Length: 294
Image (cartoon, rainbow, N blue to C red):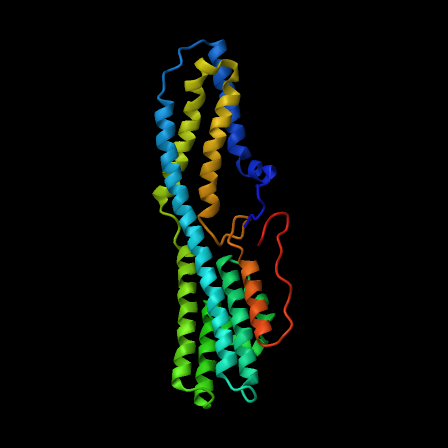
């Protein structure tokens, strides 16, 4: 996620320079043709076209931003639920005999959120999980298709083991299970966002109409702007292309780009809070790098 007050110009240019270059070349071709082979430029209702296109792209960008914001809200719920699970394990389980179990639940939750982060970003999961858990502890989950869900199931079984050992009663077990249901619901929402793309009509038609509009721009402007057509048309096209790119950047909040929800930083927040809750040393928070928080 870009956290700098203003985005870098180089980053903006890197994202739109190819279509912008093509647009500029097309503008030059139209302008040169107009003066070498004089023709009557058709009177195009560019204002009407531009207004309708702006509404269409704005609607698409709003839909993309809602997906991005929902992803951020779901991870906020994951942070809160992780803190609650750690607090319940610390307060409900007896200090002496269940010390190892309390620590195991905390470490499993840290491994879980990092596994979920990697699954959403389509990255390898094994190494982050094994960083917090032993091979024997992690193996049952690593053998499953949904590794994060396997880790959560294993935590639930350990809570049930605590109930069987008499360390907690069914009421406390239900309370911890309720927290784990919140965690599972948040994961389900994240997987829905990741696996359900924006409808094809939302993606295809705004892109198509924007490109058509950029093609028509110099034809409609050349008679008025003359030799300034490449500059004026390219600048107008840049605005539409930039707004179109915003929707592409936000539509997948877990795409592991600079526009991503900062999953690494939020997983580190969970790790710090949970380790400190059991008295362990915690790493430093993730800090922005070149204006980007990962």
